[in-house]
Amino acid sequence: MGKIGYEATLQVENATDGRLAYRVRTNARNNYAVRYGSGFLGPFERVSIRVLLRDGGYFNDRDRFIVHVTKCGQGSF
Image (tube, rainbow, N blue to C red; front, side, top):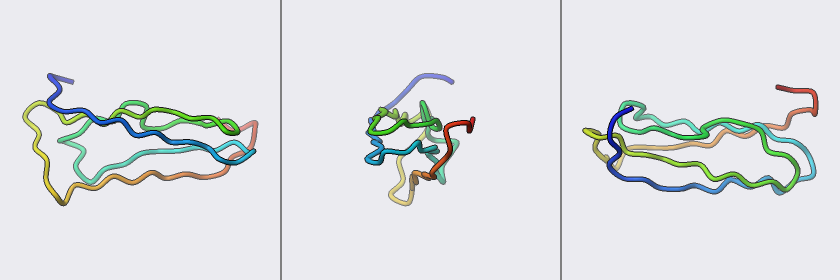
């Protein structure tokens, strides 16, 4: 992955009593790496997601991140 320039942490919390699936996406994939960018959250569970600016990458004020979340059943993978 290379050397990391800057890093930020995003906290995502499931405030429901159901299970959720999440995924973090960006419009600048070549500039950023997202650790734990997808997964599942149990009821009232929280996860820390690291957003890393890759070495040689640069911040642009048009860079965007979006967190997609959807309900899923207990048997979902």
